[in-house]
Structures are given as C-alpha cells and as structure tokens.
Length: 90
Image (cartoon, rainbow, N blue to C red):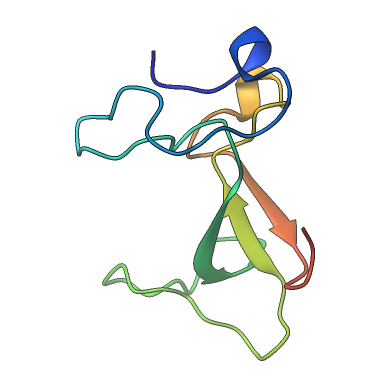
C-alpha cells in the first residue's frame, strides 16, 4: 500500500501520491524512483555532521540516492538502501 514495485509499477515510474502516505505524510519514499539526497557520497558515516545537516562535498562529487525504484528487488525498497551516483547520471 505504500510502495510502487513489481506488478503494480509495470511500465515505469508513476505520478507521485498514488500510494498511501507514511507516518509523516510523505508519499512514494520507497520504490517508484530513487531519491537524490543533498549529501555527497562518503563510504562511511565517520565525520558526518552531528546536527543532521547535509554532508556536502566538492563540486562534481558523487551524490547519494536512496529508496529504490520501481524495477528494483524488495531489499532495495527502503531508506537504508543507498547508492553512489555521478551528478549528471539519470
């Protein structure tokens, strides 16, 4: 009810808001499309800002994607799933 995946997502991404919102009122946070984060990619969390602010990197640094997409297996349809991606990648 909360995730675009498998058979219900056949054919590609869907318009936002088609599934139930989570406890914070956010739609489509898992599945549908990967979400770009403000953080630059870091292999570990050591040195991350302790106040929760974005952990920025140098210009052109790889970014972080989270949440999985419509064609991914279930183990990637979660906030803890993260990928490294070049800024211009689609």
